[in-house]
Image 1: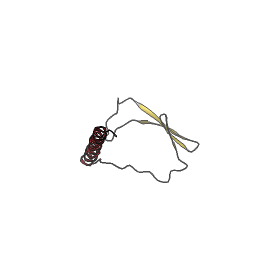
Image 2 (image 1 turned 90 degrees about the horizontal axis):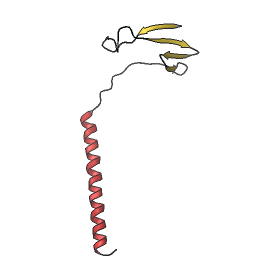
Image 3 (image 1 turned 45 degrees about the vertical axis):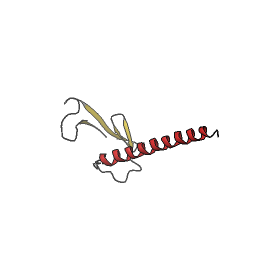
Image 4 (image 1 turned 90 degrees about the vertical axis):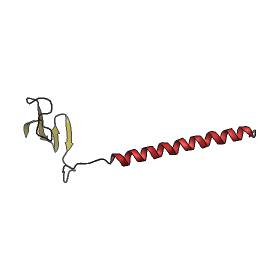
Length: 88
């Protein structure tokens, strides 16, 4: 079973040009979309979902980690200076 399908984006517009086509075929329980292979034997269900990243939360977690490691570094430098002052 071989079909030629126009490559379209979600909004229905052509990805690169209107004449660009990809080959979609099924052979030996494998779905081929261009050069990508998807084994059909283990697929029970497939659906499209939209993931919306929480960018503020990601930035906050990153900045918290940076502040933690900077404070840990400052504490380590201070501890090393104190140990050097006492000759340890």
